Image: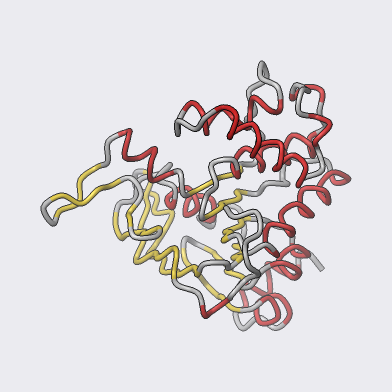
Length: 265
């Protein structure tokens, strides 16, 4: 990611993520029932929906942490997890998969920091160990990220010495350290105490204003209103409604969307 990326260009930007007819099942249980979605460069997409609606599963399919039973998801010009040879798709090798995932950062509900590594070491681990960056370059960029999220003084601290909000901000910096084109957030504030949620959302709002392409699964309606270019409402493994925050959050068309939002009013 360019630290001085241009502001969001909205609908004039090229498509970065193109999902078509995505299906995913666990045994006989169909979780995703034909998802179609385009995400443009610089957009912030917020996905809302009740538990079990398929939001997180769809997010994990984008990064090929879950395999689909049907459809396709193209990020940039590649289908993550596969490579084209002789006009046919084959499962990608671990090396190719690592290269493809360099364009995608992901932040999970749990922070998943390595407890035995310092904050700085957590952030530089993937750039150096997976992507072969020079230590000096990785450390320099990591320190720039820590300054950006307001945690420069914590580079030598261990995760146990940080609050939950600080740990999640470090997890965001770790995901940004590979300079991704796309960031995926899977309910990044759900494991936090309420008083710590704001600092993480502030970091995410900053990323949105800088033009980083983001897909965010969350129940934070306020964040969706302030930061989203488009809001997606999912239920029962399908996209029920999508549009601007004004359209979906203030004046939704679908009864299921209204019923869901009424729980937050």
